[in-house]
Structures are given as C-alpha cells and as structure tokens.
Length: 271
Ligand code: ASN
Image (cartoon, rainbow, N blue to C red):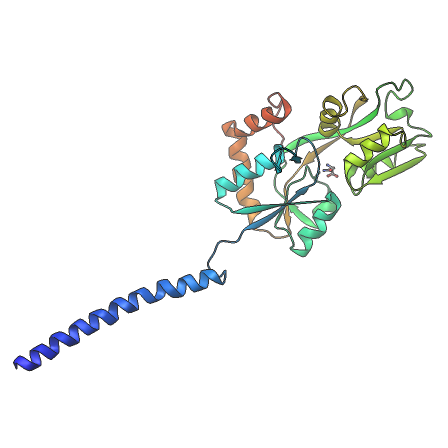
C-alpha cells in the first residue's frame, strides 16, 4: 500500500509537470503564429500625395511628412487603434493603388466626385474647397478665369483642376504635371501664364514659397469637398465616419484646422 501510495504521488507530480508544460504550449504556438503574421494586427498602408501644402508635405528638417491630412488621419487611427504606415505617391497613382489593394486608405485632399465613387468608397467629406487661378505677381492682364483665352495653363495630372482647365473657353494649352510644384515652377519660369488648382493649396503657396512672385486672382471656382478614400467595400468607412463626426462635435477638427489654416473653420463640411 505504501509503495502504491508513493507511485500514486509520483504519477500525480508527473501529471502536474506535464500539465504545466502543456499550459505553456499554446502560448508558444501563439508566438509562432504571430511570427507568421497570423495574429499580429495588420499595419494599414495609407497613401498620401507627395506634395500638397498644407495637407501633406515633407518637413525637410525632420524628414517626416506633416500637414492637415496627416494630423487628421493620425487622430482617426489613434481613436480606432489602427497601426499604419504612410506611403507618399503621385496623386494620380492613388486610386489605382486602392483598386489593386496596394494601399488600404488614401488621404490626399481628394475631391469626392461621381466618377471616382465608381472606383473607390469615400468617408464623409472632411474639407470644403474650390479652385483658384494663380498668375505672376506683376501680371496686369489676367484678372480672372475669363481672361485665360489664348493662354497656357499649368496644373496637376488627373485632378479636378485638369478637368476644369481643359473646359475653360479659349485656353491655348493645358500643361499637366504629376506634382503641383512642377506646375508652379512652370508659371514662375515663364512656361505657363497661369496655374489652376485647389484654392487652399494655391493660397498657401502664394503666402509662403511663392510670396512676392505670384498672386491668386478672381473668385473661388467650383465648390468641392475632400474625402478619405478606401477600396470598394472597405469596412473601415463606417468607423472612420463615426470618428470624423465625433471630431467635428468635440472641437478636435476645428483645432487641427486652425493649426494649419490659421483660423477656425467658418462652417463644418456638410455630410
Ligand atoms: N482635390 C483635387 C482632386 O482631387 C486635387 C488634389 O491634388 N488633391 O483632384
């Protein structure tokens, strides 16, 4: 009996040891799965433009991208506990990249329009904009879009400004550039008489890098709204809409807006 008792005890200890080892096993295999990326949270790839002041641009001192769009997305991602990585690219490449799944989100001051809605899904509008004509500071001839007859207009490829420019009556030539900085340079170097582009970008450029060299003329043309774009059917749209609404109610939106545009928004973009 005594011997049996001892054996019984040893068996119990052995069972305990095996049991403990077994308890550790799922943790180990979980670790392996994580290494294979099975349980690790997916890092979203967020496409943005390479240069679209003050929405997204490279801060040459820090080597980091910054701007209104960058702050907007960072706030949304933090709220939704999403990990992400920025992927700056030519504006024209963003929609194809969403369609092919190379990127998961695009935030690039992208105007919501019907033809784009056929290819991607947009969250609710987050910014109200329009278009503006920019000319040289000493230009006495072009006072508005009505004076562009016989003139050369530079703008950015694949944008609403390109679509608009080719429809302006009498324009001699529309020169598209993959990046708006190229269009501004063309104007300053005398290769174009005007630039037509998004009003916040034109105003920012005229007040900063282009100060004293260029001036915006005429009224703001064609009201537009910017939206964050996702691949068709993305489940993120609803969550992002909820966060956007919350940011507009809480004042966080107005705070980010004021940081980049120097004043609180006159009105919030309507959904
Ligand atoms: N808002 C314009 C567009 O979506 C231009 C841009 O560069 N974002 O076409």
